[in-house]
Figure 1 (cartoon, helix red, strand yellow):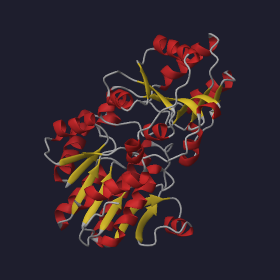
Figure 2 (cartoon, helix red, strand yellow):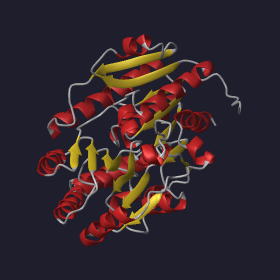
Figure 3 (spheres, one colour):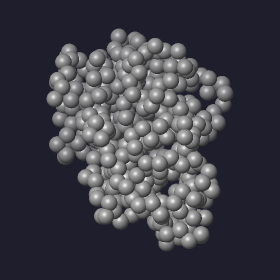
Length: 384
């Protein structure tokens, strides 16, 4: 085990939707636990429950000071209400930082742009340092879904560039994202690429996998869901024999549910806990990973790591030159199919003929995608 020598310093993690029952949330919790020996640890977040009590019940969070304000919106809340809550959380973050005075801060794009900017301002005023984790790049990612007013877009870019240039280090998910960050901000700040983690599940052998194809995750505007629904509809009407399972929420959930009502070979399970979803993926032979090509410069699909850890063969639906396509091919995780209706229909029929081959995940990658390795990687960046 590598020992990391660091000075006595305090660490605050700013993360609005901290959920420790997800791989990212558990990774951040382990980061705070690892950093406990260096000084006080703070978690600045929002929660609908008493997070301190919940962690105590599980025997966690003993040396973590939680600064949590009440969450009063959901993903289905109106836009204005969600904007107001983001601004409220920004003020809450600044007040908590001033009162606790951490010497190091970790902040991610949750929520994007404004809260990281508040962290940057605090660090400039009080001589602290911060690491900025760009899980996605805004306002560009948001602009693909809902076009942003050009003046607001430029303003948000400007304050995000300020945050980037003032960070001690940056973390992101792919080479494409790293290159775009440098090009847009002009920053010479050190950028580290760290894969998102996934829950480890003991891989099920080929002959015990009872499901065919699964989509697990957010069924939103960037996941090519209308294309996917149209392809599955035609495939099944033409006599396709494969079964499809969908798990997760999103704006296209009603359309997926309707598809499931029309075909016995389609099952929609709704939103599942992350650990349960990981086990579900492990029961299927193929996993769908559709993504809009343009957004791969600004984001990377979060479910990719869970797919890989389950050794389920990935069917990436995207352009062949995207970061997702390169990731799948480079690591031998599956196949890449162009996002074309007819091509995809034929791809599904081809899967009926092909014998299933289990994914052999290299030990190095298996370790890289683990939650414990993720938290150690974050610790090195935060304190180095």
